[in-house]
Image 1 (cartoon, rainbow, N blue to C red):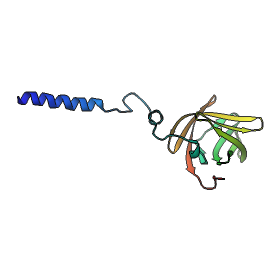
Image 2: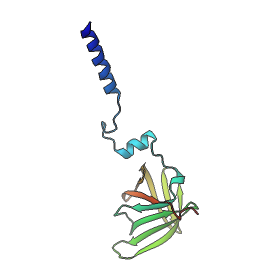
Image 3: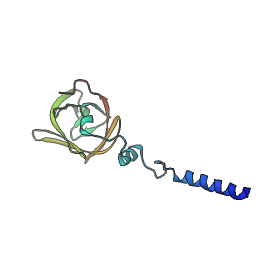
Image 4: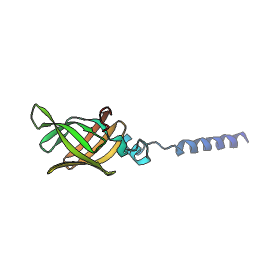
Length: 143
């Protein structure tokens, strides 16, 4: 009788252990696990603020340093000419549609696909590469 109870308890313990989900078991990264399960959801109201671009973020012939997104649909992008030594700011209109962030100014358009969001980092991709932005603050960005 004791032997049957022991086997039953071992079987129940094994079932509990096997039923636990581990995101690392299948080689998933943190950002993919959180994006897939709905934790840390990115919404448009989270975008206004100062985002620091992890270096190097070379897009075309410029390097993005930081992006200050305002709630009125405008964004100031601090950038530097590739190989240059002076930063400058350009004002763009920005749009978020759930999968992409698009910046436009005249004939210039930068579009980034959002591949993940694990607060405070936003993971982006375009045809030139993969990028990471880090959220820094919201002050002065609500206009």
